[in-house]
Length: 489
Image (cartoon, rainbow, N blue to C red; front, side):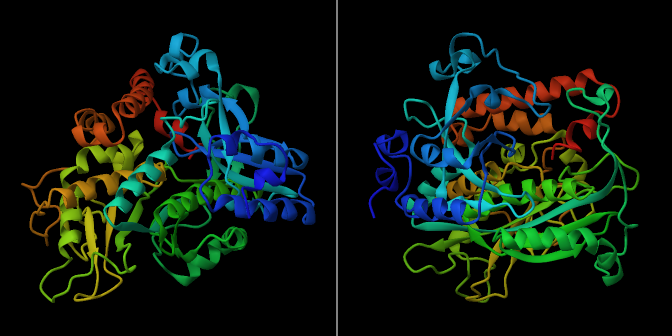
């Protein structure tokens, strides 16, 4: 089958610039057929922004063929916004404040739908959805596309003979929505956070009784996520009040990140439609709220044979030589990468000693207090992998995973040796993780590796947005974090 846009008529933007990989055209006819047979009236086109949020437009079904051929325009100002959705670049100056002519005067980018990602949203009647990549009108890639950054990191990994496998373990809170604060006086920027109540008291960790109390909404969430084809593995009761954990089967890097994007957005939408409020904010500003983390399970596969490149070939080593190098690289670049694994002010409230959350830049065998935890049964165990416990669930998945790949691959390329594995992850004398977002941003600013791999242009852009967020924080005196993050994430 030739590029399916040919089958829809004249050559369009997507084909002219070669913006799809070889797999995408094969899904076009199936998408158009499914839209017709399922009587879809509206399709949402969404891209992942700098914060790991989905933004985009909804088009009627008759316009989908045109969008698949030529994309759908959207404003560049979406890339200029901080977490309050405030525009923090002078967009009506030459280069739009970015130094890029194509972003001048609040001009447009082009969202290019990926037909392989098409979904019928089970909670939204007659509504479909497609993930998009973003380009300038001349067909060039937008340098601030976080999905493109991960694709580039994965391509470099492939050149060196590896694929990246990732499993998601995500904690979150689900509350009963009592008052959405929708009267006009609450419509600030950011708006007043909603008032909520608990689904149940906390502390009954992994008890069946508590799970049954959560089940009315979890049953709805579970059913919709399964219909989306997301690779669910488990749904668990966490320690805190109204806190749960959902885990996913391993998937290759880009698919795992795409899954995280769809999962977070879906859960928030499903809950809101059913009278609940879901939040991936790390530590809500509510009495007795507990911190939530996002533990990223990761390993490398040899492209030559698909075997796990981390499994040791003897009973002494915890990991293979590439695995040890990968650990060393992540540890060496842990401080700057924290800006991507933990991008909110609130996330740093989780780093506490003896709390099942990391505080220091260490690794260990099956050690849940360490930043990096090695999981495996020893010699030739194909399930051997690393669990990075540093991330918060609000992190942009493309940047989180890219930071791991880039740091780890630097360790492989330089044949770095990690410090000895620890049995005492909170011991004094070992290096602390950044304790605040400003500390992490300063480390990122000075990172030669991330400036080279992400580009100076992207790092300066990212720092500008996060420092605008910090400036507003410093100007406030009360309740800033809860108002900023509780509803958005």
